[in-house]
Length: 465
Image (cartoon, rainbow, N blue to C red):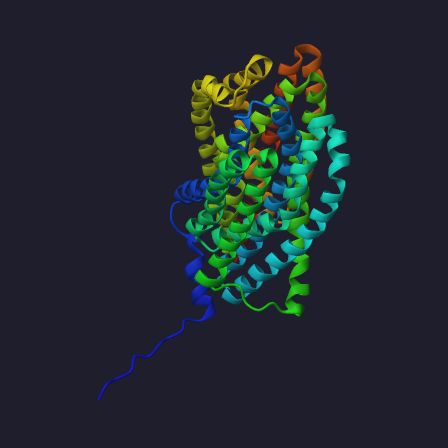
């Protein structure tokens, strides 16, 4: 007589406990692991634009390079919105995982993706209708304007797909699976790199070919992300209208400030583009190179917000405030070491970068100036990203909004105007970056005070009889 094995299904709380992996272990280890895996994902995301720029630069057409400078400013808006949704998703899902509530974790995962899809679609429609007016406002004219319009008309409609893919990756990180999250963005990078030369050169489609390749990459990323949640983690449960309405307020409370926060960066970059336009296509081309080089080189810095968020979120959910503070300090240390390393790499690589991008004259001089002198100052913006992650998880997302818009306005316009007056185009780029660094230090100071106060309040409660 045989005895059938009994299958024991763990309770929801036990399943959720397995996902709350950041409540124990070295916080620095978690920061490094999450940041590098997230950075790989962001490198894949931003390398799509960088690969487009590389292949299109081989056409040696300054008008195309200038057009990429204008389109990059607007496309960064779609990326920023996607990252804003991913921040809200990460904050809500990671805290539920930290509370060891599997049902709530699964519910918030599907609801967050639904909110993301609906809102991103509405924003994409508005942006699509505004493309010509926005490009003219930035200073695009004639042939450069036409190239930019055609490029954006292909890519802007894919904004909801990109937002869903980034939010799916954020859910996977919040569930403690950064490796699967990397697969989401790496898949897009591979598709784009494979299609770019085929469409740009073989089929002679130029910028439109690059746009189609990027659109295909976004479709691939979304499919891989949903596969990870639906098949591997099985967290995509059937949506419930009552729960959807119920969870909307909490998601909105983080998502709206996070999106507004992330929109501040393309707005600030838009002003730089506007200020650079009168100096001609060479300066716009240099700006196009810098705006695509920076996200790839500083991928780990850009990743800090999404990487640190789940670690802080789980520990806040578990009321381990000392670990939240230690995570903050570890992230600051990591950012400082990383920016020094990247500074050395870019300074050495500056001539090579100018060569492969077919740059000469003023464009080459400005890119070299950035690599030699502005890189370490720009890297300090990572402190602001760390603060943003803390604010979002501490239900102080409006702090991030105010700081980032302060950076995009008071930290950009006056510094650029003064820089141009005294140093011309060099002052333009330097002023923008210096203003951002000052804002970053203010943000990290406020963040440290908030976490310290929270820790002290918890200590006082625990000592009461």
